[in-house]
Amino acid sequence: MIRIALTKGRIEEKAVYLLKKSGYDCSELEEKGRKLVFKIKNADIEVVLAKAADVITYIEHGVCDVGIVGEDTIMEHGHWFHEILDLKFGKCKFALAGIKGKNFYEGYTHKVIASKYPNVTKKFFNQKGIDVEIVKIEGSVELAPILKLADAIVDIVETGSTLRENGLEVYEDVAEISTRLIVNTAAIKLKKLEIDELVARISSSIDNN
Ligand code: PRP
Image (cartoon, helix red, strand yellow):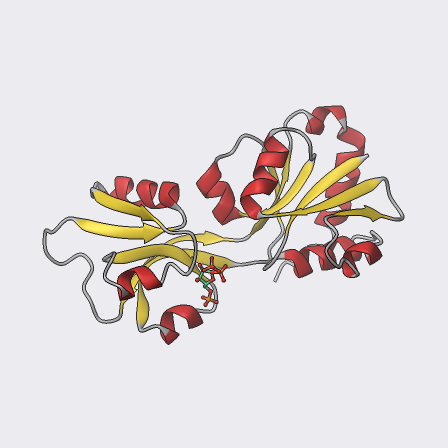
């Protein structure tokens, strides 16, 4: 049996669509209610729904074999697993953003950056050789510069609406992001045949646009 950890929320619908397109019966997932564990009826596969960071935890601990998760979470939480496929959906970017019209790099004052992604933020500024103070925020990070807690944010930008509607703009792109298929390092050997088949079926169903 293969157990897949699927990130609930934003990328869930497209991930279920991809599994269906790959020939897997996702009827239980499509009528999910408040359930968290689902059987794929025409294969020996179980799917669990979890928050992005928890998908990585379950894969790293080996209680799930395969994960479907955004590259943003992978970049923030590390790489103790195999990243097998770029699923080409959930495309967005990490960006440095702040109040519209402000020149972020102007002046020599110590900058405060708010983010849900402190590790990504730290790496970005380390590469530039700029020392910043990072404040971890759990959600709606856009509030931090509005409330003057931070000079800027490092966050995900998809459509750009959240920034626009709150008087903010992108100062600089940090990295492109998409959804990835990841596999536990032991499962890739111990369940090679099953995982190879899953990867081949998903791989041929990816929409390359
Ligand atoms: C993400 C991100 C931005 C928003 C960007 O937040 O943190 O706030 O989406 O999307 P947009 O460019 O299409 O407007 P999410 O909706 O996941 O919720 P959160 O802020 O509570 O984490």
